[in-house]
Image (cartoon, rainbow, N blue to C red; front, side, top):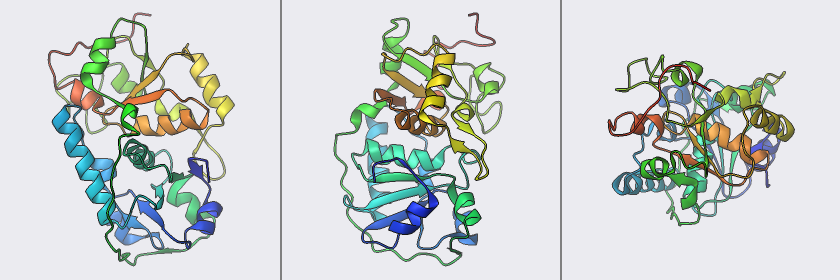
Length: 284
């Protein structure tokens, strides 16, 4: 199965096979109420805040190699992540896919439409907590290029060699709010200088199965609309690397290959008072 996004009928067809793990990225409380039968819960996929320092990267890699192994996932496991639907969980299922890709795991997918689509098609759910047998998950370095750090971003400012793409909500882009967690959650409001902007919602559209990632042609049209140079590397950022993951999946599905994420994103950038910011409405 080569697509990142898989449909509910595709998941139903493979989930009872050998070495397949379905991961619910929602809160433990939501998981306990109702989840896809057989799914395990790893909410840290959404909540974890990463720093791009060497120490921060080391801690993040250990955190998720441990969490994945504890959830019964090994290097040979096919993993399918889901959230409630595609537009209310801030891209958390896509963050699971991105993290696995970063850790070098190539058999990961996102359930298109999430739990809402699964239930709409009448597939089985349960409140029974899934018992797991811990496994050993070993990361490799094949996905390291997917993540760039604060200093990488700072060193590219003004050089026009990469496209820095801000995918946060509009109130964050124009510096009315610092984060999705509250207007003053971070010490500063604004954006990284020189960034282009496309709100992450623009990568999705409504359907009779809820919000879904747009087609390749539609995603490319959205990118052309903001003047994105298709030949330059794209570096995504949001607040903590979750909404970027939704956009990452959309771009990858559309055929963009040179895409990385500043995973520390605005949460990290805003806390370093030496990092420049822009505020208010862009001047061009």
